[in-house]
Length: 366
Ligand code: ADP
Image (tube, rainbow, N blue to C red; front, side):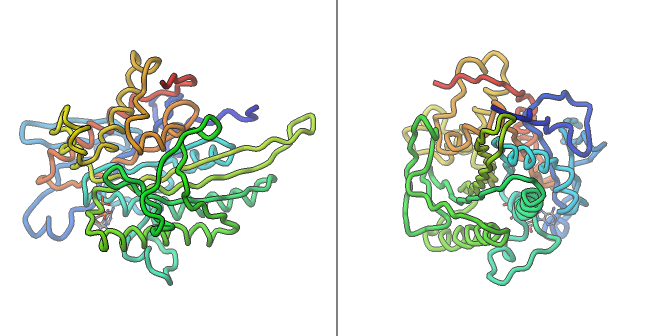
């Protein structure tokens, strides 16, 4: 029995006039033009009209897009954390719900920077937190502070994995090779033999993050992989025990997944293979299928029939975090450079599809 109904993610710090009751909050963040873009004379094709409206300047004219929050290039990592509304999702995880934060966008648009921080720093053994820390380290610290404030005792476990070419690997235990996804009625989909680390203090959790980032870097060098093709997923589970009015205790299981997605330019490669997608082994099936799940969740006619969660590793793993009572935060990262206007347009279209997902208490999956 649930004691609290989850609060809408949408009524975050910045409060918008967008309908309450939606379960996906969509933020768009533009990074600054980088030195290379400036020196090549590139200019910005993005104008932030107001905190919810972004204008894209195309050759053929302008196009406006509306999101729950638009973050311009001057946003600091701290402002990003506050205005993303992620703390509402984290509160709901501590209340025993599932949530998911994912960063979508082309390679180089700032996904890893937004999620984790400056990658080179984070992998370092002696790294001390600083203002470039992204949403994950800030969320860890927010969660820990709030767990200690609450009266119930929390247990925290974490796992970190990567999906590359539809193969799952453990970023905390790379020696275990390719892992398999299994399903049972009690847990739904789970990863067999995945290392799940018990975290008894905040440093344990930060160490999990750094270890995973380090291993992701090492494995992409060793196996000559292009890390922009892989998705990384950090899963944090919280378990707490509470007593109800008649003295019976019950457990609350919360879960949050932080997903740094493969570069969205990979989606185009997948799409171009069309019906051949299954046979060719595809470029990035998981990214393609996530788009399908998002579209299906946003499509009123489709919701009651079939959500194609079971068609990729990523969507299987996120099945309990997208739709239903779960909350999701999508951060669409864009580059403002005019050279990438087409790629930016496709990211904004993808993000717009996610804007249509509503809270659906019952989703039939077959
Ligand atoms: P992605 O993960 O999407 O491939 P990265 O996060 O690696 O992109 O970002 C590419 C580069 O741009 C990195 O050097 C990163 O530090 C920098 N960067 C990204 N976003 C910002 C930002 N908002 N402010 C400053 N630098 C940024």
